[in-house]
Image: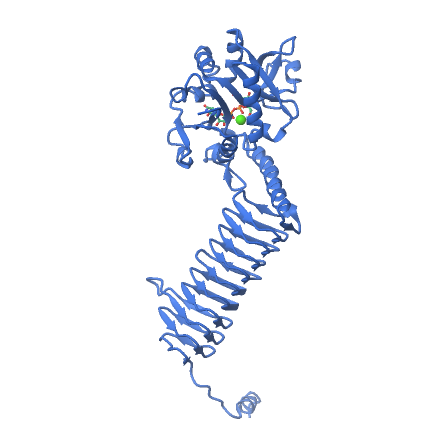
Length: 460
Ligand code: UD1
Ligand code: CA
């Protein structure tokens, strides 16, 4: 397809040093798998097609979007075996860029630069290198006397390696451009080391065949960062997190304490929103313009409308519409919908319930499986008894209705519009529109009680 390179992402490695049951490339960085970051970079570099090599049954193929071709590495170990697995899917006249699924910060610009350098030089293979990182554990690039490519030496195990080799600072980033024909011809010829077929061995083979090997030395350090351990993952995530905050700040978002917030990659925030200290916005969230979040608030997979306020609260899979206020100390559970200018106040838990526009639940309440009409006010200490031990039932409260403090709603129950409930009532029967529902014993006063008790105590 035109000048679009074929991009092959190697994602089948065992990644044993992550010490995790999860395949390495599925570990998340700011809410998105390492592999998805690499795929996103390939898309941004206008790659077509994008192929991902994974192991049968490791769960990676299932995560791939429809525009990505899945290839299985059925046989062999090592990066060379990974590339060989895709042989039948690649035309020998293609330019193929191979990327590692464990370099989540690879930049699209660098991929484009690699392809351009490769095309200009006419080489059969071009590799990316850098000397700006701690080279420990990476493949070292050995150049010949003229500064040309000689070979790559792996340094994960350093035993028996000469000091001058370990002193080399230039590393192989593990991101290459190849002519597909020469790549696969060379791959067939290379021998295995300790049962692994190293892709890095193709470069000497290509050079020995009289074809050119080009190198592109880059200062793009984050593109070069490969993740092999959870410590490496934490380092990459720190960089990604800072970049996300910077991007939002440049787009007009105010951060009270930028270094204290965690914002995932798939979060959008409108201009003039204010993000306080200790805020976590994770998963897929949409925060409207001028919204005020925090301090100390976590929001997961939720929508927050324009100018809404949420403080000291935990919000999961909920919607908070424009101008609504939540908290301090609210817990919105999946399916909570707080209508425009509505309020979920202090120590309020809401689940699978809808508050109409301007409705208020100001204090100390549990609202589950309820529909509360616009403009209603639910008094302090309201509880929906939504579960009868067998099934969940709904509570309906009509528009503009005002319920007294400490009302229990034993669902299923329907309180009409413009109605009231008496303080302390247990509402088990429907309340018609405009009525007062009250259910509590009449008060009885016992005159002279204190005097009588005092006398009894004195033994009179
Ligand atoms: C590789 C390079 C090394 C380079 C480093 C950069 C080789 C032999 N070495 O080392 O020179 O400095 O990357 O980070 O290539 N994979 C498969 N199938 C396999 C094995 C690996 O798909 O059988 C994938 C992994 O998922 C990973 C990538 O290939 O995404 C690289 O493999 P990894 O084992 O991490 O290679 P490194 O030892 O880091
Ligand atoms: Ca690696």
